[in-house]
Image 1: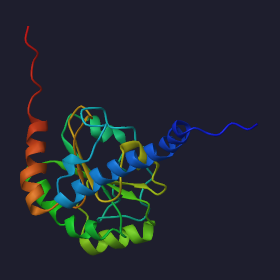
Image 2: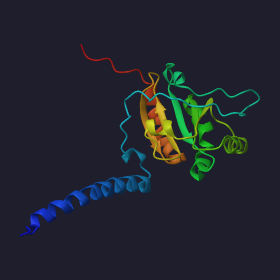
Image 3: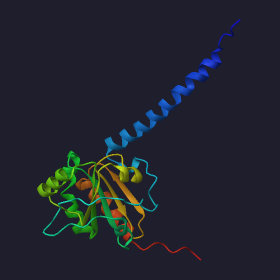
Image 4: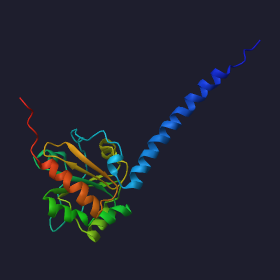
Length: 201
């Protein structure tokens, strides 16, 4: 005689199916809330306060501002100066909207901005920079998105502030606006420039 499954057994089986769906739904809702409210700080990031992941980028062939633009590499993040790293792509409409603000950021904050071209073709990337200008001190390409995975990139645009020790101190998801530049990025840069607090004896 075959045993009849108990209600508890059914409930246990259903919970194994439903639990991951509920967890995914909660995380997705958190992301949606952060994007809709324009507060990228609500998106979780495991990298704040930790060293920026290593970079293995390729040069953007053919890019020139009168002279070849240098390749962006990891050494630039540990040179003792606060810097800004921007993931961007030619196919990204919000990247177009935020692009002019990087010249303003450089002028007001006195920092270098480095660009990582994300999942793009070199020809399209060069066309983008030729049309909208090149605010980047150096550029690298992440054609397959592997570096983006290492940095926890959700999509373009994303912008990181890195202190002089190579630690990520701020992450901005989505397009930078005049308001977020003034109220979030510039204050984060100034804070990153401040000398580290000396532990009490």
